[in-house]
Length: 356
Image 1 (cartoon, one colour):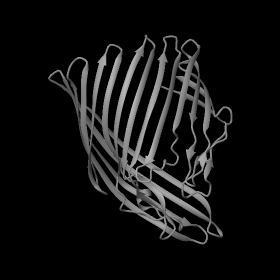
Image 2 (cartoon, rainbow, N blue to C red):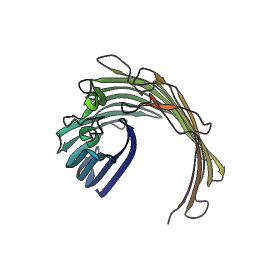
Image 3 (cartoon, helix red, strand yellow):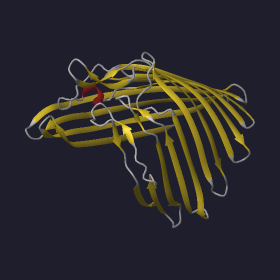
Image 4 (spheres, rainbow, N blue to C red):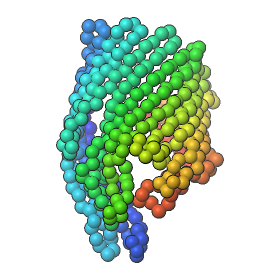
């Protein structure tokens, strides 16, 4: 049995210069307080069943949003809300044979804002020597957040309290193969169906931005991964994914959705098992913007030097992100004048940590 209690507080303030015209100083405020708990019980039954039963409750007792102009003073939003979320879940891991496992379960969530939703998942897993095959299905949802439902900003955007949760059904076939003692390869083919996707659009009736549930989205792809770990401390991983996500009605590619992703990282021991260096690379192909243009492809390299127990209790790391100063931008949203938003160039991080 495992129990957990928690309390979270989040505060945000944004200061913006908006050209209405004339240029005006506008401010955003958001404060959220929430507390909750979770209880999970895991029990083995009849040797072949491993059952997990749990429940969760979360009370968001403060969700305040406001937006106003400083000079001349004008208030566009002063919204205060509360909500409660409760959930129960059940899962059974059934060893049909020594090689075949069925993992199935469901979760029921109830939101005070829109009601309840049931989401099942199931996985059939077969293992033979160094090979594992998995057939997976799952359904999940994302509830609209208060910003998407109730935010109003300076004559630019409006609220939509009638937003519904977005739902995704996932289908995946995975093949994993150990190669010798130190290498593991995997291939994963996936197909996703997304319904009621929450997206920000421009309402032609009044020219204001608003979040609405959209049409169905279909996404499909293939991911290949090779990873290795050696007793000497060397550790590496390389993956490639090709994917395509389209609106099922218009058959258009989604914005900000790359079709090719490549990731690689390598950890090299420099001194015994105490000092290490790592190199991480990431490539992302071009992405469609809201105006129909393309944000250029991205190639980033990060380098890190870090220690583990070099001195008792102390850890040190130094990192350079975007080592080669690659200039790139991410697609903007409807609130931005820019088609792409320029991202950080080369940045440096130093971290010193003491554990006791």
